[in-house]
Image 1: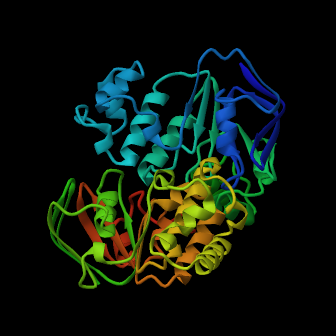
Image 2 (image 1 turned 90 degrees about the horizontal axis):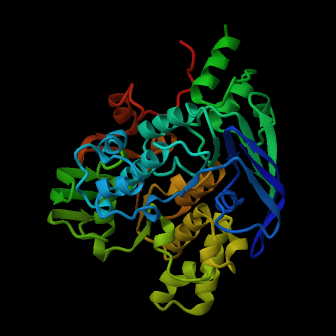
Image 3 (image 1 turned 120 degrees about the vertical axis):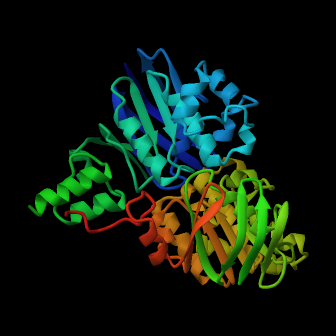
Length: 232
Length: 223
């Protein structure tokens, strides 16, 4: 199972993003500043449009999905339970997982954006996708659910997960880090080595590095453990 | 001073709450009533029961700048320049003044390069900056930001915070999931289940929330 970016170029007006590289099984973090092209790359990986040059080659991918940053764009059901059912899932456990127990009859529009995002992410993560593309999954979630999501992503054992985000307070365990730098997608390699090559790490990782500690991975716990080990 | 009395609207119930001028941050779990409160303070919705007065006046009689959770939903115009200019044009400001003001706000937000771009081609973060530019262009008394920072990276959040500090709004009310930002507010609200469970200085509210995920990041890592 792999996704190969073969000298791919994406253009939108004056914007241009080039990418070459291989997404193999595991969790891949793609970071970059606002407007660097994370969402454009996510849409291209999902097959929403073709690259302007080069190719995206998918091998062994039987199922794939894209989680959009704003959950309302996913909603098709008139009630929360119908929304869960529209994903082919039993509503009760999904609503339970989303922290929305007993609210199956409510109109999705009556929910807060954060609640709706929890529902959509719970629906998506309830299935085992070969290729799972998550565009800013942390936005709109409260602190508790950010930690829950990181735990769920860190437990994904199979398939390719591409996590595109500027989240800087609560990242999951990942296998590889990519960064969009000046219009080019650059692989920083596997963690932990990639962490030292990261030009814009989140504050807690930067603090660990400045304290002379190299975290084993990129969760806040990894950063804390590394610092504590350094300090004996 | 913002004064809320006998308020009941959707999930939200607030009997009596006073908020000082300056920066107020609202935090709490998803679905706790933050957006409902912000929409009432902005005058977008009217309360089913109760009253909100901002410096003695109802929200709809004040100049309010608003940036919602999904800034793409409030963008009206196809070109970024026109979007930021819209509140000034709606009140018939002269064209040269509109152009100067749009450029000044855009320069401060670091989005001069976006002015001729189509609003439909922007990323979520860029849309958030454009929406903030439109909100600030008319020099609002009250600025309301509903988790705007959730669409922004660290660097952009810092630039936006600097700009908000420099803007001469008497009230800035900001819902956020970033506890480091909440800690910088003058006053902090914690809402859960439609109720204000804590209201006070960030130090006092975070002390009451100690041990929960709603705590500012700590640099004291090893015990």
